[in-house]
Image (cartoon, rainbow, N blue to C red; front, side):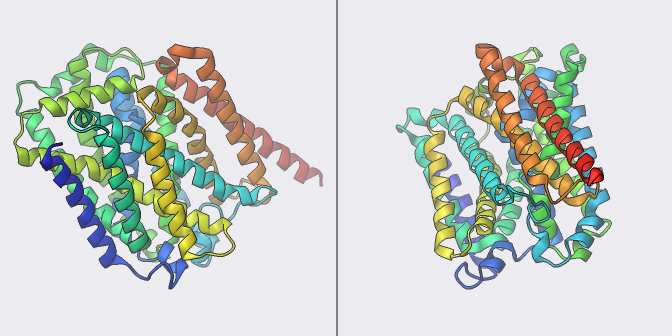
Length: 467
């Protein structure tokens, strides 16, 4: 294994560990509540959420694969989805502050939704965190697979190293440590991507030529464009419910300022530019816009690009650090999220139990991810989309009075089940052609899920009116 790559991995993780340890507000044994929710501020909140969305885009390869297959429509739909999510957040920010009252009742997405299945909601969110972490480690190992030719199972070993050290600094630093390490990792990401783009831009090929290709500007199928719009909207609005946690751990003055959302939007737009540029490079070199969602093809391209990249050893180390930082910034966010939600469905918030949950989730995720290739990532990833729309609906139920609060847990869960079932049957019916029809699968499962939710909401309103 290349010594420089191993050094880069360990350096990012060790520095993250030190930052988390120095940032700790209180230990998990002294005050679990403060450990899980303390230490936030508006600046850290912005950087954490930008990092989360970028990492989600890597897991699903939605932006990169989408631009390769769908051209400019992916970019337009993505930006419109982000803008729509920001409008909803802007409309609801005062509502969140006023209606949630005390600090404790504003910390998680689950507070205001009640019903017979209320106790199942935290477990559902923990499940989706675990699935997402497993997918992320699968992508991680897939992209590192060339190292296995030097040392057998090298990508798996590195996955376990990341899982153990990341879990350790989450447990050491708590929520305050996670937020501050996310900021450090975003800075590393910026430096590494800068080096990568500089190297490609000064290479023998010009990535910008992809933007002049006729396929890039052709009109993509409508369903695909709607899928990218709704996916981006749902992800940024409430997956993985980071906005509620961000709001809930800031005081009202911090997140209700006029600069919070505009600054976050500007930073996110800037952070998406490197992904757009690299995706255009991939589209140009692959040389076809064929409206396919080919995950493995996209992964293979970026691996080959890195292997063949003409950049010095120091530049490679920066690029590797950037790659790792982008993964870790989401892994630690979701691990602390697991601890936060586990504390909601366990009566006794014992520190040792929360530690066990975090380490077990990360180790199991790495173990399962080692069995997944690009197609498996695709198949499991499609089943995660109903969870994303579940979260966005849960967010809307929380912040708008139009929705019933007392009996909505059952409707939300029923919609989730319908979305998962429709996704499964579509994958089964398409068979080997499922990957080509990913946007359609996501779209029709979403329609079924939202329709189920709408019917349930209407029935409750009619019943309430009659009573």
